[in-house]
Amino acid sequence: MADAWSSIATFVPKFLAFVVVLVVGWLVATALRKAVDAVLERVGFDRWVERGAVGRALARSRYDASGLLAKLVYYAILLITLQIAFSVFGPNPVSDLLSGVVAWLPKAAVAIVIIVVASAIARAVKDIVTAALGSLPYGRPLATIASVFIIGLGVIAALNQIEVATTVTTPVLIAILATMAGILIVGVGGGLVRPMQQRWEHWLSRAEAETDTIRAQAAAYSRGRADAMETAAVSRAEQPRQRVGAFAQPASAAYPQSTAQPQSTAQPQSTAQPQSTAQPPNTVQAQNVAQPPNVGGNTPGVQGGEDARASRPAYPESTPPAAPGAPTTPIPPAAGTSGAPMPQDAPGEVARPTSSRPNPPEEPPSPRR
Image (cartoon, rainbow, N blue to C red; front, side, top):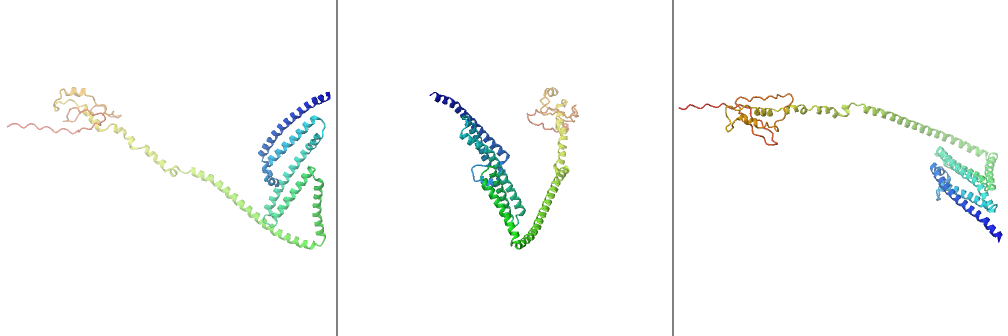
């Protein structure tokens, strides 16, 4: 009984440490998975992978390249966490297995990198060969063969890195190389010498003719590109000149209305305004206001004509101020004009000019017979 309680007392702290290590490891693995996914998407890792065969293989899956690599990092951290957690209990078979798997993880990462790099190189070689020999009948098959060969070498190197099926991949590679060497030896040393010689002559002549064609096409492409670049440079050089010429045009040609604006500033109405303030009707009205009393008594019913005219206002609303330079002294009335005061104008009415003609002389009464 005492041994059981001592075993429980020893196991409980180890179990608590195991749980704590698992929780902390899971949190770290989750954080690293998100960080790796974000960093790979930021640097464009998916675009690099899509150039090779791996990108076409991942196109049919639900994970992209960055997500798959982030998942691998997540599970690798979990394996390391399990190894540390089980090591709390001391040496055990689970810890030994996890230690072997954790030791294998760096090799798996290197193998993945090898496959990705080999796929990118194969894709680049295929594009180059297709661009160089695409017009030839054997251009595309040759590009495909070169791409497949490079990918095969990458797969074999990756399998050797992770130490998987090395006993199979190494003999297969050796067999392929030996077969190619044997075919060459038998063909050259056997009865295929003359047919191969004829074929080689035909192939060489055809390759020479096609090489001349390719050179002519390349030269034409280079000349066309040079002409296009020269035309673009000339057009870019002429554009600033056209702009400078447009800015340097005279204002009269570009804007004919601007030259007519000074005429509007020198309008005759503005210069003739002082004359409107000194109109002749107003001066005549001033003459009528400042007339002396009627001595002859032509206006009946008015007693003391001079006093009445003095008491009457000078009609300020109808008499505008005199213009600058106009005479301020009243002008005496013409001979024979009536000295009666003018009637007062109604508000808002303009004073009408009075006649300045002299009255006809009165005929003397005829003597009675």
